[in-house]
Length: 360
Image (tube, rainbow, N blue to C red):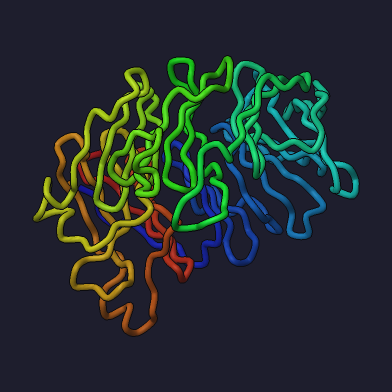
């Protein structure tokens, strides 16, 4: 299905988008598809599939690379642009003070290099943006706030309950997944999936795979793991260990669940453990340890969760290479899929690129 096309050495950081590769090497050079664009680059970030932002090496300048015009542009150094588009060329951003001790929430026009709207929000990070409102979280609560600074509701995370495995600790949000049918869904550190009403902040649904939540108000299910919001039907996919589940966000029920090993014993069932699953349409990619391996990750694979079958796998690091160099793959670095290519990086900063055989 895929063949290895190339290996690039000394890759410190990379992002992929629409079959294009953007990366920074150990010499702090910024590359686009193996073509060096500039020296003295650090901390690259993809913005809304439109720009790459990065700093110079001593962090005194912020540079933007336009993916459409392929031009570089230096912008105000105290602006940190998020991935959230407010208008055509305006993005939600943080405007830092000169000493970087405080910041203001603003909208920023990349092309004109200027702040367009200064909000009344100061020193407030956000996790999710929609309809000119933000979801903000801290160690104690999750809040819905307007850009004018009005707090619409607040939900205390302590109300989710603790866990017998970490007595005295409060649950925290691991990832906000998205909005579906008037509810905001998030996954927590203690293995819970929670839906809050967007209008009121009230709990609509609580699902848990944590044994501590038996005999509680949580609906119990198999252990929840990496959770993904599926854009097409707005349902949630969970991949945990060897359990696969789909949660219907309209009916608020688990509609499908199965064990990979039972569904595909001669395919993904030959793996002792899988790591860093990443949802890609009807598939998820993963890193894996085979039964005969000894705790180190050498394999990558693609699993079709609709037909419940491993459709492709590859031994990236041979046993001989591991024995000689101790090289291996490491989570949380997943196997990325972009266009007709796959990308995976090992612990030695080698980036491997694979290409589909049936697409020219």
